[in-house]
Length: 622
Image 1 (cartoon, one colour):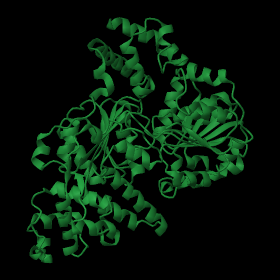
Image 2 (cartoon, rainbow, N blue to C red; image 1 turned 90 degrees about the horizontal axis):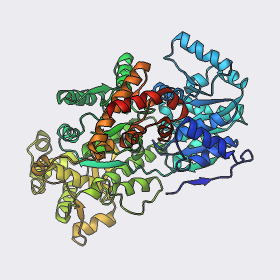
Image 3 (cartoon, rainbow, N blue to C red; image 1 turned 60 degrees about the vertical axis):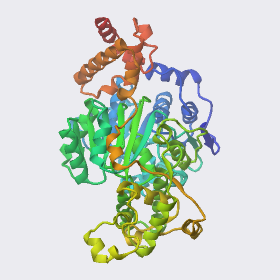
Image 4 (cartoon, rainbow, N blue to C red; image 1 turned 90 degrees about the vertical axis):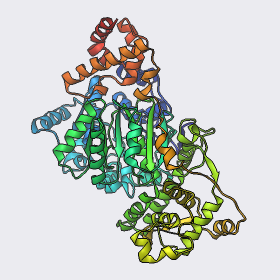
């Protein structure tokens, strides 16, 4: 989808000097041209305009404010929610020669004093601050005394109805429009449906600004969904061919995080746990290991990930269903930020739904907001049970149409497997009806399989006519069928009954029960076949295996050289050079500084700092 803009630009906009922002792009950041709507956004902000920018993770949002910050006079203030994001951005900018710093709670007193001194002397181009620091007593007054180029509000979805539960201070950022009316303000996010977009504009008083909407498509990410059977076994099978890759595994609870981390360690993976219940120093250590080492897998709750700027995450795996399709998109977007092949893998099952419904109902949100969140969860269920291309279904949710199936998701890559489930569906509906339309899929599956559980005996359900009539399908197949019947409206979940299923629209249920309609759906293969089938995913190493053998060995040697450079400076390897840059060098090794300067990601400061050493390393590899 081509980028679109809405709303008039405003009186402050004028065409930017093309040479200046292109010069900064090329000489500072090492890129030959802008991508997507970047150029239009940069020129709009340089001209004094404010805007809301929606761009996928890895789409280059940061350049949309970093380049204007270097082209406009004064200090750029970037509001960022997490220390890790600030540190990554500042370290990356300093590598390119940009005068950047951050003020946050983890700084030593002497470090904070150095930043404050530089701020007062006008020696900074960009300053990163948390919303709490920005709004602290006296800080806005201090900024008012300085020349300011712009304000950038990153992760702007935190101002939405549920996003501000994470950082309530975001709701107070409307004060920037009042106190700094003539300073451009740029709100940026990778995740916002139309409702959230309008909420951001209203809460940040950006109604008069432009909206820049880039495509939500991340074609380098392969979406693979699996019916949850034995999630531990399924995850280990997925990871078997991804040893040495950095990745994130999301689980719904702290106990599950620790259990899966232990399983991965026992299987020989370099895995660490991360959740809010761990001591702060242990969380910091886990984050630092993930940022600075190669091939580390973090098993985490949703407390981990926002603001992680690590570009070489090769996979994101969910062993439990996320809360919404927006959350899924945001979390999977942390893979493949460098544009190289990555995988979003998820094992999902009906057992995930009652807890998610309960979370919504037990929240303190108003009833109208609860209905919205139930709708978002319903959209996620529909995505998991899609019958066509996953990517088309995902993009459609964000208002974007993909003309052709993507060819890079499980539904495009794997055999259809659709079967006539008319009779099985009628049995499922009968089980719902005969048991009183108040039980969830787990109990209904036991009923159809003829299980002799304590619950079955207690309720007397062994005497129901539907007990044991569904042995033609196994447990996983029945659970998948119930999910799909719910996704298509034949059944609906009643949150007041903790996920109990009842009939949906009569116009759907009645024809199916009467035999006037047939139903064809995809079901997972029988359990025995699933255990024999190896997990097939995108090629490991993010495209490295596509290199010729000599180039692949050169790439690995370059990664080792980069690691030495990073460790000597105490920075993550990816702020020295991204894998994409090293791949380009490995495939066609430059022999001079002039040739090296043409490689994407090699700006003047990095050329000056690393050029001779990198060329010497290449000569040693020859």
